[in-house]
Every structure is written in structure tokens, then in C-alpha cells.
Length: 284
Image (tube, rainbow, N blue to C red; front, side, top):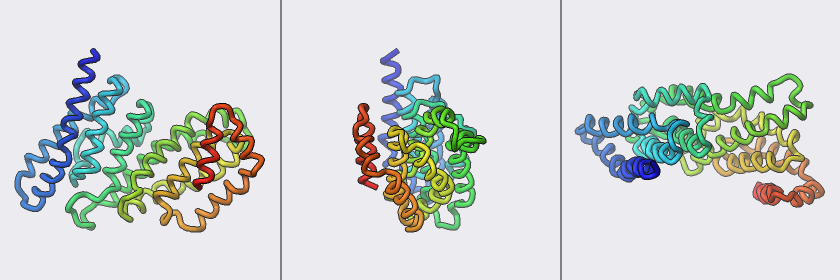
């Protein structure tokens, strides 16, 4: 069984190794308008092979390898017809419904990165008027809503602000939601203005909603660590989109709440999370 899993994962890895060559082939077909059927067959075959094994019932190593292949297609080749594939449409529907959140975390992160890359990165050799930005932005918002839906169910519950039991119950969902969004936002660190703008527009309301969580979880370093990582990634990747006003609001929130005494208490946390919090606070 182990050999079979290893072999299956290596097959996807071998196909992925040719993605840069396929990207050049893709550009050549667009320039010469030849062999497009061959390239489309290569891409569709890869997607049809990879997507079905991205599942909780499949060994994680195989699913991860399949995700890497799909991520390479969506972020390196970037074919303008990728949204037309039934398997891709199926993934977007599952993302909208939040079904992909039940995958192993590493698989889930990479799959969401692949889907978001597909929706925000400019398609290769396609002019801006033909990029279908409106359609892609609509799908991106659905993906983000799918990620944040469980989180919103908690924070929109009546009495949330004062219910400490609810705060404790929500912690696993908060950690997963913010970590996923942090990994997605990190994608655009070196991307074009259009990609950054689309992602910020799709996540801006969530960013605003996240600020009060600092007040709610100020005494819990494990959540503070996640929140600081999230905001630090926003500043690193989307600073120009966030703008000076919101940047000041976020930094002032942390500065006013994390006093010297609180930081000293945080450092003394036995599990080492306190040191991470202080380090990220200094980075902010």
C-alpha cells in the first residue's frame, strides 16, 4: 500500500515538472494559433486526473501531489478556458458550500490557493477586456464567503460579544478561517495591481470585522498569534489597497491593547506562543 501511494504521488509530481514547458507551449500556441487542441487535451487530462483524488478518502500524500499539479496549472499556465472544465466548476461549487474546509489542512490550503490563483491572476496572452474579471470576481467572492461562513455563524450569534463559552467554542473555526485567508492573501505579495485589488475587494469587509476580535481575545495568545499573522500578511501583501486610515486603525488597536504589562504576561506563556505573539507585534 505504501508503495502504491508513493507511486501515485510521484506520477502527479512528474507531470507537474513539465508545467513550465507546457506554459511555454501554451504561449506558443496562442501566438501561432496552432496545436491548441493538443494543449487543451494535456491540460484537461491533467485536471481530470488530479481533481477526483483531492478527497478525504484518498491518502493525504496523493491529494497534496494532485493539488500541487492543479496549482501549477492555475498559476503557471493560466489558460483562459480553465473555468469551462466541469471538474473546475465542481471545485468552485464545493468551495462556495464550504465543503473543501473538511479536507486535511495542508490539502485545503493548497487547493484554495489554486482556486484563488485561477480567479485573480491575469490569463496568459489575453487582453484586459477579455479577462472576464467580473465573472471571476463573482466566483472569488463566493469562495471567500464559503471560507468565512462558519466564522460568521459564530460572531453573528446573539450575545456573541459577552458569551465567553461561545468565544471558546469558536476558536478552532477562527484559527482555520484566518490561517486560510492569510495563506491566500500571501499569494499576491508579488503580483500585479489588478490581482491585489480584486483580492482586497473580496476580503475587505472581513478585514474590518476582524479588528474587534483583538479586543475579544486579547488574553488568549493562541488566537492573538493567528490574528497578528493575518494582519501582518495584509500589511505585507495589500498595504497600498488597505490605505493609511485602516492601517492606522489596526495598528492603534494593537498598540492600545497590548500594553507593556500585557506583553510581559504573554511572554511567560509556557507553550511558547507568547514569544510568537510578541515577535509578530514587533513586526507589525
